[in-house]
Length: 257
Image 1 (cartoon, rainbow, N blue to C red):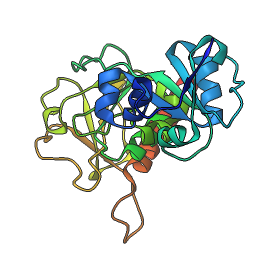
Image 2: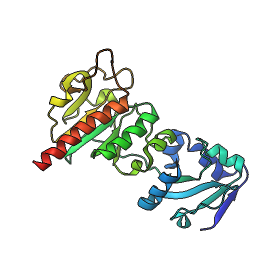
Image 3: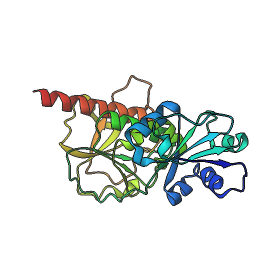
Image 4: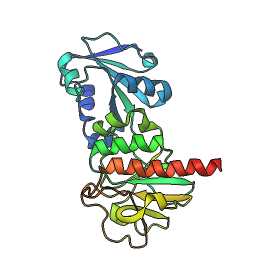
């Protein structure tokens, strides 16, 4: 496909690329940016239908990643490329589809874990996406409080895992309580995860970074990760990863026996 050269900051396409560093415009244009050579290769190879263009600096050769010949290629002047390359990688940037998320209605139509994500830090969102894909989470529901899963910082951490698991848009954290589905809350006051029996289908709810879980979840089951004295809490994404590992490890053992 022909390479499109862009040298003006007034170019409409350049302005659209620049706006994709903002979640509001990611929702509007249903596009996002993904950087990192390894991640770009993986997405081009495994999810070609999600790729809509590749951006690179005119100082560099045309990217030779397999699959780029089938999508538009945009050669930007070094200054313009530096503005789009928000992490300063000096490497090509892939434009990917980021369709608006379908609404989660609370129905549990398949077995396994539905992870409800309230994290406001996009780095934590990216980390928990990667972890969820690794441990076989059925679906992820991004609550109203959560950073957008296709925020550049989230995509940078999640990599190709961003396309490996179904995403849904959920309500605010405080509105999950009425759902008619088994809710499991991560809480320091919960039962030790080592002795906790996970149901076949459930929603796992980590707390917000800092405030934790709001009031109104009296009927939900609570599970905790035991820690040494003096340690109050773990990073939210790390704690969720530990919980998912314990759940998945137990699932695998139950299948063996």
